[in-house]
Length: 122
Image (cartoon, rainbow, N blue to C red; front, side, top):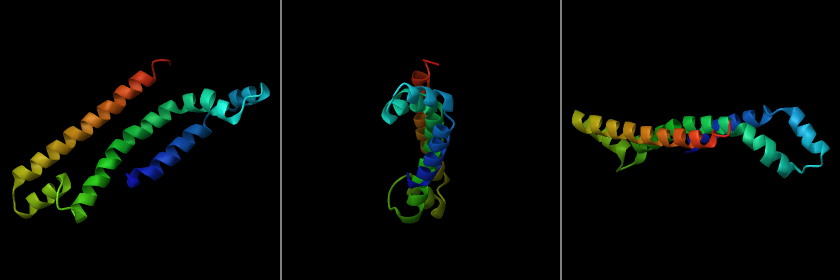
């Protein structure tokens, strides 16, 4: 998870900075607070950026977990891949990789479903 934090923060910050300044000035003119500006303009305009960051983070998080398991774990999918490679059990390695691919795909599809539901208003 720590692998994807920097990418997420930079991506979402970039999305926040791309919000139309005219809309923010208009709300400030009408006396809106910073929280209202964030809630009514900045966040809705940044939803696509946030969803794209989530899509990227699905892959990065799995990479972080598996690499961590490669190095120090005594259980888990990463451990099974390393162990299968050490004892020449290709079936164990391939089964672990397939399970990993299926889990990553399911998580990605979950984010895509979330995106579809959040983007109905557009």
